Length: 484
Image 1 (cartoon, helix red, strand yellow):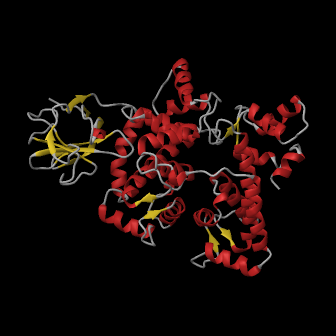
Image 2: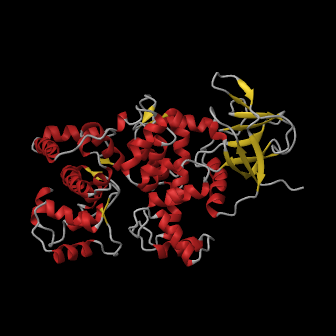
């Protein structure tokens, strides 16, 4: 009799409840018996120790550190005679008769199959090798304080790809940001740093979300980093998911929660998560749908201290003016400018990366710590001399400082008008922005400007498009002055 290729663990409550879920059979074996991986980005495994136990653990090893085990020497964990044993709240192992392991049909969903296939690729790049992980962590955490920032993580990815140690498709900023956020919010303790114990989860997340980014780019045939319903239908068909018009529209509407007619990468990730891990708690995706429920989810999941390090101070234009005044003082004093450059270019190679810029902003100028604005400033600086390489050079540093102020002011204006905090402006939000700035424009003039900015007719304006609006002659002078 052929054994089922998927398993369902049910019934565990209290400590180690997270073992519950669906596990799919992998291509490799352990001690000549099958191995199953849980349908989640950060996996658990069911495998045999080679002696007398089936175990559920976060790594395929000797089973000495596991979440659950059952005594058995057979070939299938669904045909056992005893009960699964788990650790209770008092730290003692006890049999739990409620825990059941049942066979179930394998899934033909391409996203589920993608998740299962990742294991062999991650093994190839050493993501599951403890010795390699220790070496990689020491390289990342060069000062030995056991925490690393997003900037340091980005720097590692760039260097590993540039050195040929990792494939080039692992270096995508949207995927890295999603991996970082998921690690600190869902898999971590909710602070701004990735700790040593969260590092393995971070690498798995980087791998997984870059895989999803590859799919997203294929589906996004318009290359505007958003998917409309027609792109969604065509893309799903290419992946082997053939949906009828009505079913496709229904699925798309579920993803497009604000009904703007466009799906961003983070929303696409939430959709895939629901397919791969339907047993999970969807509230953990609240941080990517909009910002309004993120703090609530984090506090419920991690306690009242979860958002302590993520507290956002309300910005004012005066705060930006203060930093701008400081920048002007630096720009007028070659000694101060040279000192700041040496701080950001700590290795003295006369070029700085996006990660190094981000690190300086986080540590020295937190009021400017808005990633969309930082990205725009970085891109403007590297294009300022026409070479458009990936580095800000010493002669471009002055322009970078100016762009950091300018685009952060723009982002402040943009965010102030973005009522639902989904980082896109509807027509009404755009209109409100112009009115509060004192623009004397008719309804037709406002609608005309909105149409010029919203070039694809999706009914929303992203921050990049909002920035481009300020280069248009039709942009109201009063609004432009706010960003000067």
